[in-house]
Image (tube, rainbow, N blue to C red; front, side, top):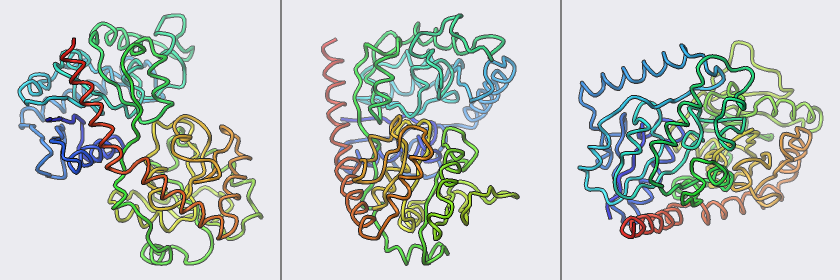
Amino acid sequence: MKVVQINYHDIEGGAARAANRIHHALLKHGIDSQMHVNRAVTRESTVVCPMTPYMQKMNQCRSLLAGLLNKALDTESRAYLSPAMFPSSWPKRLKKSGADVVHLHWVGEEMMSIADIGRLEGPVVWTLHDMWAFCGAEHFSEDFRWREGYTRPNRAADESGFDLNRWTWQRKMKQWRRPMHIVAPSHWMADCVRQSPLMRDWPVSVIPNAIDTEVYQPIEKALARKLLRLPDDGLILLFAAKGGTRDPRKGFDLLTSALEHLRGEIKELELVVLGEFAPAKPVNVGFPIHYTGRLNDDLCLCLLYSAADAVVVPSRQESFSLCGAEAHACGTPVVAFRATALPGIVEHRKTGYLAKPFDTEDLARGIAWVLEGTERRNMLSSCSRQVAIERFSFPVVAEQYQNIYKAAVCAQRES
């Protein structure tokens, strides 16, 4: 069986990292997998980037036009939108690839149009890394138009101009007539798919994103802190997010509120922020704070997770949480809210703590509970590692995808 993975980038960004790991999990499982991308930096033999200079220029123009369209229509300023209206040559190239299964990941604005996706032939599996597939043009949504259908009456009061989300959603309804097999990385995302008018009758499965637990594994804490030049004593709480504190979905404001409740209670606590360099005026969280900037290589991430006594994921919305799964693989407990995808990562009081959704006092209690005593942290660490191996390891995830591919091929033959 030959499977072609389709993602805009081979390694840059959370979706690319997740897609790349699924690709490598399949290769180790003996499945003939290739990764086809618009942008590649790894130069791996199994990563195909057929971008000629002309195609690169066209891709840049497509991206520029999409950005100008977003600004001109002023449909929504809170998030990047992808109307996906400019055609590409991907359907023709994939038809010639000889793939038994086309596996879509993040195809976004700059890779395929909505019509392109509708023209794909043969069995198609689509792993969702955000909400775009069943929304309008938005990649994440805080309202419920995706569940109700995009009508004129249910448009947000603070939006104006042309309704780009409604127009994009209507084009998806028109172009995507043949069901694709949807894979959601969490039960929350799968429930969203089942509630959407666009995909409610499509097959959907839940498979978590893959973690190479042979790479992501515990490193001796004292060594990890020494190599990262972090304090060798005291307690370290890690907050990790692309863009650091600036993305409201990642909930850094909720974390600062929780830390207010801990002032004077955990005197030896220090916070590490991954994904952002120190700002000119660092926020006062009541505890010493360290900024690491962006770390992309696996070894540095393993060191950081291992150096921490706990990882906090105060997100308002997560499709999976690679950070939480990576932390568990390194034997580090996670504190998060019992919301969206996090209950599929964290087992309450076994691998961490799940606070009441967006209750910062309960989040503070969870941080204090996880950090209370070496014996408890050791127990949580052991359980975290075991859960990661059982749920997220390459062999476990690859076998589930192999079953999905077989089912998709059989369904295509029967149709």
